Length: 393
Image (cartoon, rainbow, N blue to C red):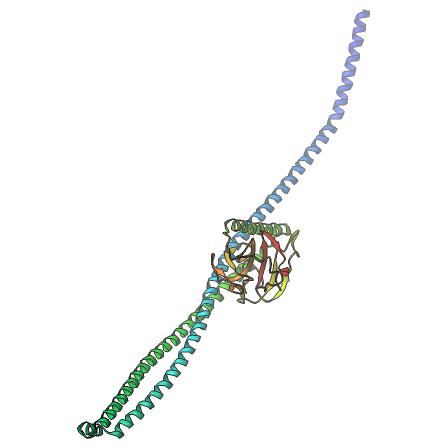
């Protein structure tokens, strides 16, 4: 009995502890469940916020991608516009050269025509005098001399005199006929040149209309580009990419340069070179460009179509459109020296052309997306940019 009683009491004790544990669990479970529910709600909210952030990031990345894509498309359109303007501007420049040459030729022909007209009048007067003299002397005197046998010496001299007069008169007539023929030829050529001049002026007018149309198209492209604003970092990356693009192009050009014996470089020409174009300095060498980027050359303000002249003799290495620099000409001066001329309206020289100091190589423009006309100019030695101010007087 004692053992049974003891076991029963022990059993009751265990049951009491278990009951207390169960009761405590029953009281604690609602609080735990509530806490778990709150945690799950918080996690759901966080996941929702994270999803919103991810969507916002994706949307921003998509916008940046679209902006960059549209920007690239507009830059390609800008290249097309720049090249169209360059083609027309080149044609207009060629026409102006032809106009100038034609006007000079017309003036020379006009002077020659005046000289021939004066010579013709002079020959007419001389022939008239000779004919009057022959008429006054009379042909019968010559016949009488032939029939008169008394003074043979006198007759012989007189006959010789008549022969001399006839020869002189024949020579003058031949010269007169030659003058008439030359005058006719000059007059015809003069008229042809005048007609050609009129054709050139009509072509110039037509090309001028085409140029205005191309410029309007370029303005539309620039307006669209300006609306696609890039962030400071994007702009910095863009400029950095353009600069790297230029450096790579110059590196490739340097690798294919064949040294010319008569190209001596610029080492002895410090402060002796002339500037490629006259104008106001907009950006100086070494000044801040964007972020940590600095200007490797100078930007000179100048009106559109003003001639750009090479600073020294050399050979054209590059003559084409380059992103960020527009229509660009690069000239090799020998011994690792190069000069660069960018943002031109049109290029007057082709790759391989030899140019002399002061020779026109391009016309000032605003290609490459510039909002105002001017020339970007660099001098480099073995790829390193030099301060043009130390070289140009």
